[in-house]
Length: 587
Ligand code: FEO
Ligand code: CA
Ligand code: CA
Ligand code: CA
View 1 (cartoon, rainbow, N blue to C red):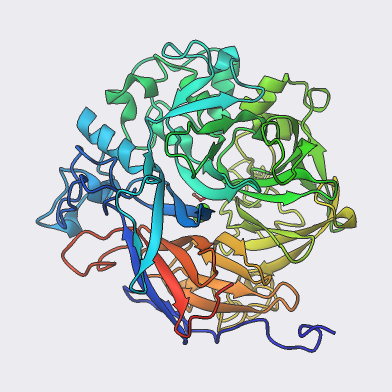
View 2 (cartoon, helix red, strand yellow; view 1 turned 90 degrees about the vertical axis):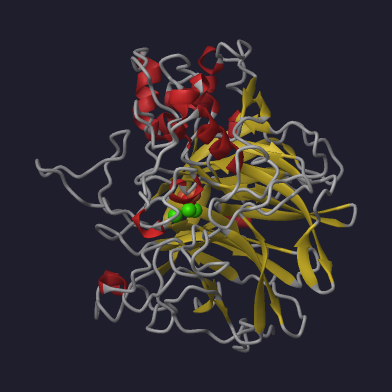
């Protein structure tokens, strides 16, 4: 009989209250400290961070990137190598024209106005590889470590898989269609059994724009519509100062973004690889499992309203010390369908099922998944695989358009025309709280196509909604309120760590939820407890552990002042370390 069956708590901490202030709170018996902030040096020749103006363009690729997100830690020759995504930029604080005198009057939509601005923003994003170590009990970045590296929007990448070399991947600078520059909007993370990092390209569309005509080629234009590539872009203005991002000149450049990218943390000179076999969409993260026969399985979500969940299954098996070269190249991509009877099926995206060629399935994966009737989901964010049981979880963060109708009374669709009527795993109209779906593959085999599913939790607010679906499921109570689950990892004990990226107004529908936070959930009892609260304005995203499990690394993205350095200076996204005061393991 296990401790669990005897009813012992799986939680090593007592819940904390919701918070609404400018700092971090953790459960009693734990402590936190800042490890690294945007702009901190990776190399001793990096420019100093000016508390009023930040980092100049010269050397902006020698510092820790902005807006920390997914991360993973690797033990390489006994050294601790932390690999971290920098998702996007806060242009209200990192552009040189900012309103330093009156920061409250700074325009939120400040936009790059020069090639110099664009280059600086390109350098602040991508991936940071850095060695970290404990000195005198405190974790620090090892400045000038030979492992340290910045991968930016201009770093050389290789492209493999079915889309590599296809005409839709070719550009003037790369007529081969096999080499591109940069990795974009690096959101969630993943790792492989062989010790490499997976960075996941999410809202890549926003970096592209048009100085003239938009492409008229039918397939290209349809892809732009499905993926949201527009003439104006999302305010980065890259296309005005860097012709690679001008789709009038380079209509295929957007096809070279939106991928899972593999990075070797043990070699700072290695070339990252974009694996097109795993599909092109707004990738959240990549969570691996092994099928019972040893094949590699990678679960992935596409974070946009009404988009889909996917899994990759390799052709060959993953064996310790074995050949890994085919495992993210040769295999089958599937999209998820969920049935009302709590079963589901992974449907293979084959040429026969989709009517598309393999390269086009890779480049226009959303269209392929629509063709097989994949289930529209409420913005799939992180997926986590339970290392202690044959099950996995996906955060469905929210969906303001679920079940909504247009003026003609028709239910709204995703950009591919797939209706977003309420369905079994996404059961609430205008879902503002989010839910976590869990699935158990048939025969406990992640390689199986069939699965059973349930909702682990529907977030809600029983203080505002006395009953009904917006009160949330039974495991939601006045003490653990949250909305918009997003980041997620399951530790070696099976605790589910849930991070939020939601409405932190603490008002109305969200009263009592406080700032964004990190909670832990027991997979068996369903109990959820709040463990950590973030500072005002921030999202809590990214979680990994030191090799000895004494330390959690937690990401704080887009905080507002005074975090972390006080009032009157620029706020900075940061990674914090969280430990037990007694030094015991933390997952
Ligand atoms: Fe970058 Fe879907 O979060
Ligand atoms: Ca996210
Ligand atoms: Ca989110
Ligand atoms: Ca974010």
